[in-house]
Image (cartoon, rainbow, N blue to C red):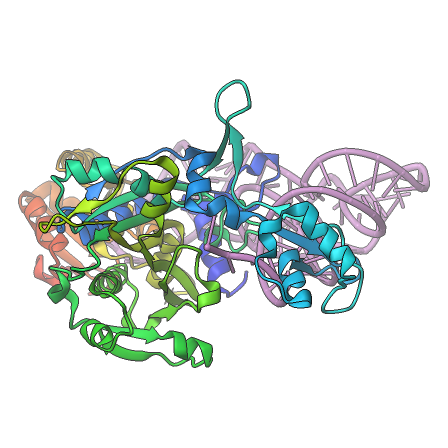
Length: 514
RNA sequence: GCGACUGUAGUCUAGUGGUUAGGAUCUUGGCCUUCCAAGCCAAUGACCCGGGUUCAAAUCCCGGCGGUCGCACCA
């Protein structure tokens, strides 16, 4: 068994049912992941926390838009043009290159991509372009389209594409949402949903998949009035930044400054950018990622998306792969609304009190949910030596855990299971994600719950039967306290508001330990 | 897509031409069991797929699919 944390988490995920690769019975296809019960619940809980941090308190507007879109959408958004990459492969060394870039380098011409496939092929031949690494012959360029294409309807004439981001839904529905929001600005439209990207080489389990869940928010504001009313909530939050300058000079050690300072020093171009980066940092902390394992890294102009004027990736340092991107913070300017306005002819401008009109500008924080699931698991994971076994424990933040509490009779006789089942049903009725377990020894059952990250386990013993007292065992400390069944729900409420286990009742010690 | 390595029960692993394909663990049933993967008995369960070589293939060869790493890609 490997000691690599990624392998260990993958193994637990498969065995217990957090996630595994899809289509297994047919041999599998890279880039697809099926979430099992624990994974789904963890994912939903992360989603719920995202809504708390980014939507509920601000009163933002949430939508749910189709995955399949007519081609017009991505013509307008620029994705179709920007997805048409002509790739060529060296016959000798097998390296792949973007054909248009090779031509641009050789003949110092720009926007070769726009000429189309035939012209690119001709230019490669005419200019006798060889492999820049080994000098070998290049194969004919092929079109690499990383959007999935499909047909809409029966004729096959209407080409559709699966959305590679959820954002276009927010732009296309901007006008209606704006009106439904009583034409107040600034405001934001948010969406959580599936997107698809036909990745050339998906890797690393949930890290890069061809279908994944995204949580996106588009904040619309007046460029002449760019202030953010909630900035004060996060302005003193310290963030670690790699500025464009630092990235260019390959500086690896980020500066640590407050959100306010980053805005004042014009490192961040808008208050909104700073606000969402501050919120995102707090969000990641709530997911269990410590400050020093987070940073924001600026995109250089050449790596930015076609729509962006400034982008920061929020990165998390994982033991498995080093720094990985978990969210992107893009300044999309008025690019998208402008593009859809031109393409559709629909006016998307907003009127100011002084009767002038403007196209709102957009700040977009965008999270990949699958990556967050993995990050949460990795940061929660510890191994503990107990007797002669290694115990796997996921110390998930309490509300993120797939299950809140497990209920188990100490032994499966003398009426203990009946009492336990009664309490189990009581907790289900109270809305807890509860799990009942009477299989195997008590230690085994605790171990099972540790491995799926259930924070609490309540054990029904003879004291429960005789005196109405049960023990609650804490996942993180393995400490046990005695509580009266009558007070159970009250104590759980306290616990889920943040109380320590020791505040719930007197410490219980088993006979063996006494 | 290229290269290297790789694929055996749910999971981990032994087996390198002829094995009833072995073990560990998990799971299930039973016995037992008063707090951290206890014990005993029993049961279920595997050679990634397709070709080829051979009297004989989990084992050798070819192709496909999957995985890990590196290159490229990542709007």
